[in-house]
Image 1 (spheres, one colour):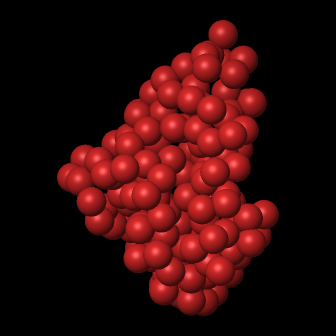
Image 2 (cartoon, helix red, strand yellow; image 1 turned 45 degrees about the vertical axis):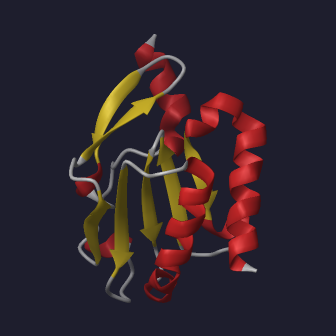
Length: 142
């Protein structure tokens, strides 16, 4: 069931974004039927965030489905929640971050009006870059 939800979300992003699916929020937790799991795709790299302590058990499944969709991952970064306290109250300190594939800490983001590098080791802190802010960045790019 979990694998099917991941496959369905990835296929949906591919249909919706076409070539743009190479740079998108590929899986969005509750919205895609798997609370606490976020996947951001950066071409042949990805950042997976497990926002719930128990969701980290899905790491291998997520990695396997990502590899089926994208092919061999150039870089994979995983943010794992390690404390049960309110996540934003600790400003990201309840997360551990590791690069599980590759060795560079930066990934390239390509948007219609801009491209730039993001350091994936910054983790979950207020103001950290994410795809949901693309509309706010568009005027800056122009």
